[in-house]
Each structure stands twice: as C-alpha cells, then as structure tokens.
Image 1 (tube, rainbow, N blue to C red):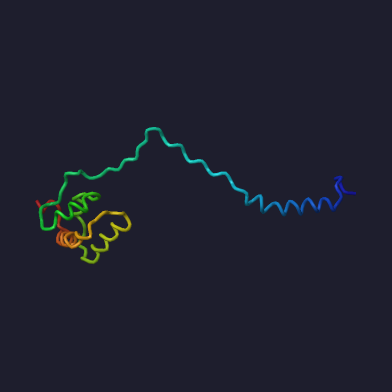
Image 2 (tube, rainbow, N blue to C red):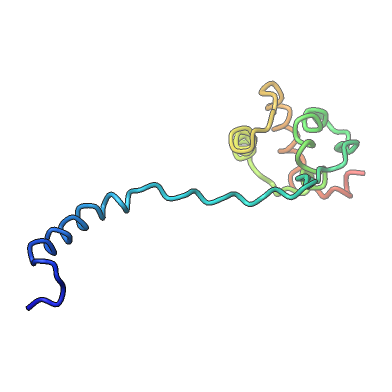
Length: 127
C-alpha cells in the first residue's frame, strides 16, 4: 500500500504537470542585477599632456602639433622607432577609426613627412 494518500494516477499527473511547467519556470524573467550606486561627487578624469607643448620647429611640425599633440606628448612622438610611410599611414588611419581622432585628411601628407624624417632621432638631439 502506498505511503501517501494520493492514487498513483494523481501522483503521475502531478509529476507530468511539474515537468511541463519546469521549462516555463526556467524561462521566467530573472531580476536584473542592480548597478553599483554612483559615488557622490565622483568625476572621471583624464590626464592630458600640457597644452602649450609643441614639437621642435622642423618642416611639417605644425600639422603634427595640431593633429597629434591632443593625445600624444612630444616626447612620445619624437621617440618612435623608424617606421615606413605605409606603416605610419596605417597608424594614422587606426587613430581615426579605432580611437576617433579628428585628424584632418588634408594633413596626412605633412604628418607622414614629419614622422618619417624624425624616425629614431632622440628628442634632446633636436634642440
């Protein structure tokens, strides 16, 4: 004799109902995780290179000053390894597409001329 008072048919029906409802229960919307509360008074900051910095006066330096010094320091620019014009052109394109740099396309030739003539020349040897 069964230990519970339910007939076997009712028990089987309960199990079948539970199995039918189980997928729907799993698909029920889960509550969204709450976002971490913002810290009062917190402000994100970005350290940019000094705004009065310019590159040594050489041909095409002004184009690099206008387009590159917004994100890169002169020290960073002047200490780049010797790269070909094609590689520098790809780097300029990457700055535009990957990082959203607002580099004027009219400046590409001047920037490329500058970057390909400073290759490997140490900053302190320019002054």
